[in-house]
Image 1 (cartoon, helix red, strand yellow):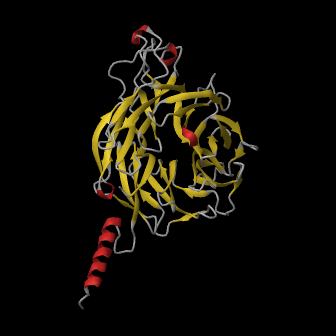
Image 2 (tube, rainbow, N blue to C red):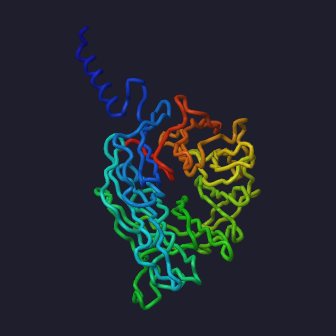
Image 3 (cartoon, one colour):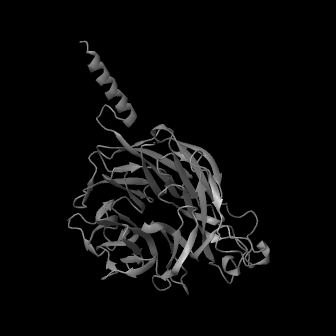
Length: 432
């Protein structure tokens, strides 16, 4: 059978579109890519996300080397062409005077990758932050600046920033980089507000932005506020949030008035922070509850009824996710109070117009996931939710009902093996 000219043109267009979108003979289509970090062998796994089923298939040549030791955080630049992996490294041993012992520890790095066809990562180079043990990265909405959170500041500019036997938990630091759009490379943005206070650095500008003790993660909020969650210590300093406001023109961070918010007494474990653009939510591991706050000029004020109890029998909440519409909150739990059936789950809540939480009506809620989940995301098409599960080295996938918030299993299996001991994961739409 011969096709007319118009028929041949139409067929050619269909074939071209299928190739571009990654469609297969099974009727699927690649809606985006996912990359998962694994600490066992310092790797980055790669997956294609099927548009119609949410099924994950391996990216060719995956897994990739993380370019360092102990990969813990990963971000992708808007547009999907550059991926950044934070390798925490291994902290050195310190002597009684606070000096690092030679040949102990491994320096942390930031590995830069370009993204090719079908989500293939190509390592470009590694760069360093201005502190010790980088643990988190956050991209601003423009993709022009990368913010890297360091567990410790290693600058000899003030005694509060140096590890000593008397001060084992000095403050952390945020290193700010501008991003070159053509190469993905990073250029340091110095702190223009604060100078070093000792003779060791001759009053020069700081190369970082200080935060609280034992910082763990960061989150951008609407209006350019950057919140850093600080764990504090177990004896004197409770968990807190440090609030900066970003200058989107030059990447600078400026502390807001009352920039430190104390969250709870010393010894309380606040594990995660997220936002729906109007409210901020935190998970309290110690008391198995969720804090909710409003934000006014960068200052946090508790929502009426906060804190909210987690769903029984879920315990050990470690991560929170707000859906793309800001209507539902999902809490990732590593354990349960049921000693006869210890399992990991996702607790689901509705968010009302005043930021208050209520259990999402579903008899399956909380939803079972793989063992020891660490991170959770919603895919670029907003159809699916995925978790990285450290204990069994898997990714769990769910369909999200965007009207009700209910989660259900994927149609072709919901568990996918990944690299050993996964930490966090990130997803991007098709590269443009």
